[in-house]
Length: 256
Image: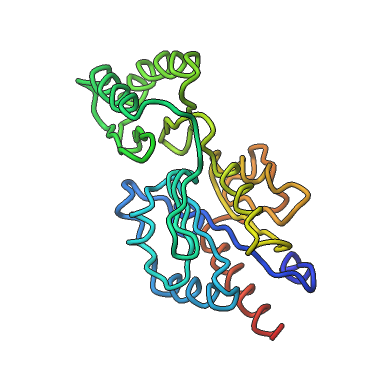
């Protein structure tokens, strides 16, 4: 691809990759979105070629990412950057000083509000949680949204938490947590000084990263190109992402 050929000479690369919808297809439930052996091989090779400068960024909890991609030298950012494992060391994004019990109160309240409706489930995370409704039938989804939308407006109005909409999922996280905020901090690490960042992602939650990297690196949106995005380039689906990564491997090997 032309974008790979145009990568700056003489600068080391720092590769950020979203997981669901980017490296793997979106699945009805998170545990069904498993990496393929070829994908594991590509990421293993990239981690080696880039001297461990590959970071998988996801809304998933950190432990899930580690279990899905047990690759030596790979870095992880889970819960939209709130928690990570970088260079083998735990890392946390400083966020607001909200009481730890407050998310639990919100979970209990939302569970009560949605009782009697079907096709939804809650995923508890650190430091927030997510409501999934991918399995709801269209009629039931309308009922869920009728309950959910006014509740979300109140949560946003109170100002303690932010609401991150995604593909049939809504995440509630403390203010200050985002993929873009985490990446901005990581780019300040001395070990990544002068690196050229590449970020590939598919969802609304990746837009903060695209915005953070404008004018600094290469940003690639995966999937629907009919919606506005701050990304500079686009790829149609995870298959094209894997092809992009294969070409990047070849580019790096040829550069040796």
